Image 1 (spheres, rainbow, N blue to C red):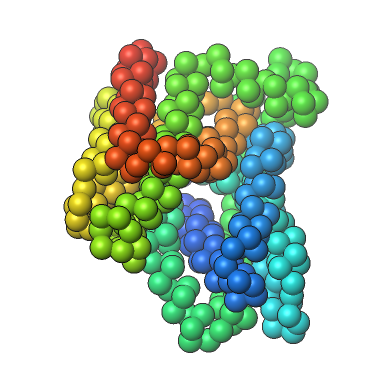
Image 2 (tube, one colour):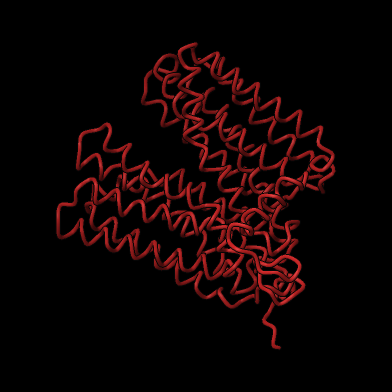
Length: 418
């Protein structure tokens, strides 16, 4: 039986091999496409209908399929291999973007039509995100995982930082149809780059048998049992369980309070709602810096770094309760961004190194679920606490994250991580 190159046979420098360059370009472009399209979609729906329920309806149409399909997609990644799923999802994105572009160019689509097509993009995201994370250790040498994760996450943070201004400026200059065409072209380039990686690594070599990636002890599982096996592994493995719990709690305690509470804070203390853009740009800049630092100077004692990252996020959230100036708020939110991004790179790289290959797609789907699918709960938390004032909101959420840092520090599995 012939074998194809594995990650260990590739050159050690992260940018010294064409496979690695295509991986970084493909995943980086995909991240930028996501950031630009979200802004395009929001502005386009506002053009179609008055601000209000229509915008929320379309954004929910994207979020619901993504959240609902993440765990089944993790099983699919482990069965079919991450390269195939990532490339397939990337091409599905291209097809949907082209279809939406044709509608925008030649017709006047309804909000419902836009929502349906956007929902298909949400489904593509559900497959792409865990596949992309599981693909990295199949292509990247283990000692370079943190660096490549940092480059990909840095592209995402950069897209979040400049995406709103770029998308809005291009739309103003050339219109919605041409802008969407440019986004579709970038998505196609990402899909081409990812498609070249499908056969870089032969999947199933580490499973110990020929039953395939969905097998345990030589028996191929049904999809439901395969999903149960992944959930069981995550629950019984202390390192995975602790990190997933920390990610979920941070997401719930930060996203809604910063976006919703930040808007109220800006209006009440920082000189007006317009200052919220400045504050959120600080989060984007902090995220970019945190990603790059985590990649280029990986910590020697990653367990205590995780503790420090969680504590920094908690301290930043609590600090927002006392800020009265836009620059102070921006600095504090930048600290939250640095901690979040640094933590993201370290945690994902650690899981990619340690989770068995046959379970990696399912575990990565849980990571994505904890990261992006809990946003509605975070908004509920913000809504419940806001009537008591922004000071209470940020102190409670910051205290919860600081408490999480204490629990993480008490976990031997995480504390001893190197």
